[in-house]
Length: 153
Image (cartoon, rainbow, N blue to C red; front, side, top):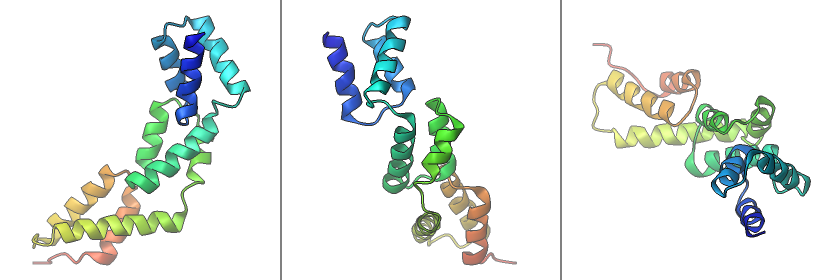
């Protein structure tokens, strides 16, 4: 009975995906049939909901860690989240807020690199930084074209 209480507490503490809960159940010593029963029971009492998890994950990673869609999608796929839930998760990210965040991060990085005189090197460093944060290459390139002047000599 204490294992059941532990997994309920685990799911109540924060949103979880099926993958995380399955791993935790195996960690607690449940066998495969018990894991499947527990997952079904948690879904039935609405403690486990992948769409809700995906939405919360995308919203949190974007607003708190300023991650882009690419990185968020990679992390959701690692947790074996369906394409449907990933699409639903991206509805939590407003397009205008997304572009504003990208501009903020790019400008902040540009200020950090203010001593860099070579425009191409500056562009490369900003591009790599934003790519690492999970933003799409075409959006980054558009920002760079509009905001960074390269030395043509």
